[in-house]
Image 1: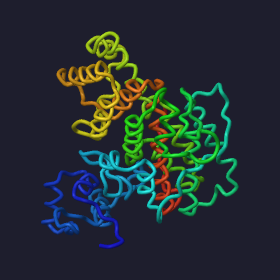
Image 2: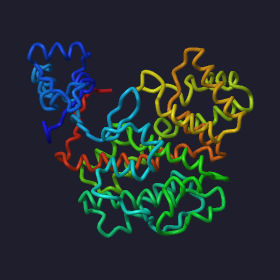
Image 3: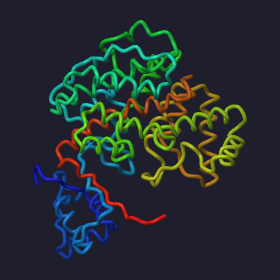
Image 4: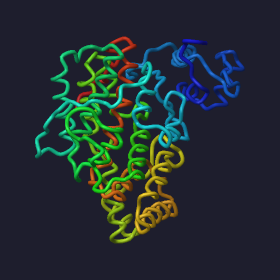
Length: 394
């Protein structure tokens, strides 16, 4: 099976829209062939064979509303969180810098150049962080004479440049640390160190570790809305700068990337008025709790669990109690479990960061995943995302 796309049993069942017992019934009836994994503890299925069975299950009909089958080797979503090319993100978050996780996603050859170099830019003072990011990507792309070079090594170099430039663009809330050069040129130290110095008034080692963990945990999450936008741009063979702009456009909405700012407000109110009043007021006006519930994870978001432990290392005892009381009260009332947005909001509150710091971390982190999916999409036939509408007079 070397060199051929394979799916594990969970992915094969999900693609076919059946449960695991039905999947193995297909195997027993000879409709599918299972192959032992190298370690011998699970079954694998050829992606092309699963796709053929999926087509037969529709009677060989093409489904007009189905854009494309996106087979990816970048990230798998499991109950224990995202897995980047076979390694759990929750493990990487506490063991490697963000740059190493990004290079793993990008499948780079050999060690990446360090530090990552930024484009020297002077963003307008009156722009917020999200607008600065879009401005920075446009300007960085305009200054890249070979931005249309889509060789993998050129794309990876552009991704490093974009990431470092975004970090430089974040408005500083404190005097830069003497150890971190926050002017033009290379990011001294790690991305997490430079970004922490931009966001926090009093950064220390524990906070840098927490920021790095957040960046790694948020680097990719399979086909999230912004990632799909990037893949569509890649399918049309847009360069990476324009593809990242597509991702940033989706991130500009309140439903993807911005929920951590609402969670930040919830936690601040819980500290001032008490958890019960904060949750009640939020439910009264918003009907849902920001930072709780996820469409993928049936149980608690594993990324929140990692971030919560990091927050406890930097939070005051009072805030740690507030965070625990909010989570406990939501659980007692049968509300959905917390997700990574609550972790980002808690990190921002505990560190004294701005209210939009969670969105900033999310956006910088996701450049790694966007680039990985961009590179993957370049290997597919172009313009494959062509939907057909069902016309109805209104």
